[in-house]
Image (tube, rainbow, N blue to C red; front, side, top):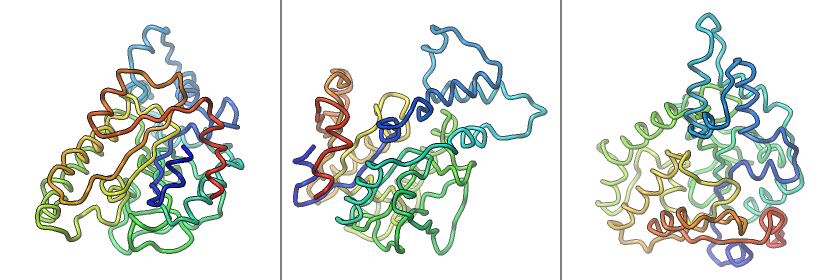
Length: 293
């Protein structure tokens, strides 16, 4: 981890909910929140039934169990359960590292613990904002012109500020894939066309997708398991696009605790050019002295 953070070309950060669980309490778990929603819905599943479903599928099942006459949003209820979450010292330390080095952060979390730790402002695009897919919106201390090389905090799966943006279910993830795929392949100014033509702006140039496709990235704080359909698809597309770009490929590191790195996941990520990095324990990630550099 130290070598990654202190290298000359600093990476962007892709952060999962592990940053909230570390030093937090049992309420800072998405599995725990889904369990709370399940109890509210009166949906009781056996351990075997629950094991059969991914978290994304479980959310969709919960949504189907939502009473027809209840017009409230399950996404809103999920956000309400997160209102008590608070940032800790390592949120501020990690955000401070990214700010000093001008590196972007992408988080798959919905909460604002990272941005609140530095009292950052929410910026929207000058045109085309939608609270359903706020992919061009970010938290920072100033307006960003180049997502690749400037500090900002981007929320890949939505923000609790906009409950409609929350991507929790498999249906949500498939919608995100459909939206991003049209930008990568089907538009006149698609990413693939821009790369083939040697440069220019594509439809996602002012979004966090620009960071995903073009920056070195260190990933930590989540399992990046088979639930993560959307992000795994994006990294597959990144690997494909690197075959047609003249630029040298940017590195990706996936940092996990020693006993969490399964051989099956290693094989998948190796084919994508992702390097597995194991550490003895979670403080080696979240409390690493290199964050002070």
